[in-house]
Length: 389
Image (cartoon, rainbow, N blue to C red; front, side, top):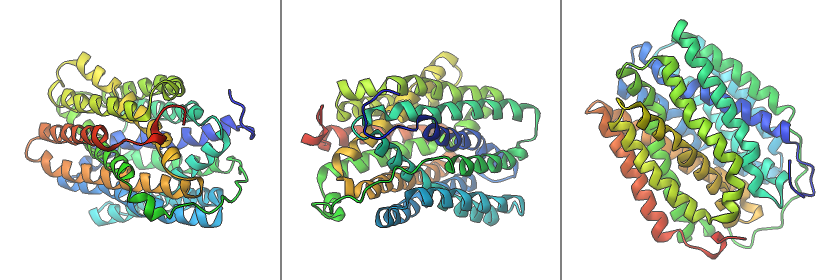
């Protein structure tokens, strides 16, 4: 690991947590909709159920982020959250009715959504003077996603999709076990921020950043919830669907390897604009080119930018816009408002639009990305977002 940070970077222990955390996403995200469909739920029901884990991000990260900033016990919060999410998920084996599944998804995700923002803060604290190297650690999350999305796809080609909850429970156990090996950076208490957190949130550049991030995740909420169902309706096998998911994440890994150079050479605003433009094109290609495999693969390769580059730029944007004393709350708010509210709205409205015509859901995603691009172009302007800051 390169860098001259004053703290020794525990590269593999930090990376192992990302590997397990995003490995769970690789096993669940592409196949939850297929699992719920096998249980007889409608598209609207599926959209609502899959919106629940995203919706809990609206509350959970903010609550746990405030607690972490107040107590300084980030690592303890990560471990307790991982354990409680594992215990809550056990309820999926008790009953398969709509409200029972809804309760399980709400319970486990409330704790599960608390842990990643705090792990992000711990990771950045170890990197200290070289935050652009974050992507080299985060790429192992993408590797975990690839392994489990491919493995699960081939598994479900020959095994019942109803074994999905077992895979999910095992990976939740892995997240908890990996959290036990994450070291404590012994963060010092930061001096009081020069501005109140609520004052920072009223600044136009911060509002623009959050709105753009939310709209980007609205578009991804549709993708995460319905891409697999869409592909299956056009005759793709589950292993084929898993391969298409993995194509995007393989591209994401390649980009993460180079991301630290991009952050040095280009402003976060320029990176975000490029990512949003590619997102608009990506959702249109998926919506209209399902019978053209090459274009579909190209669209999936854009995931490297629509998720990977955009997320890395957003993390750096938070570092620049929020003082150290507000870092935990800033990370939590980004997770809550963008991944939480944005993802939930995308999944929910995607489900409603789906019953009218599936391709319209991807049109809606493209529109959300385009509006986000306009917001970044017009209002994401600040001296702190320039190169070298």
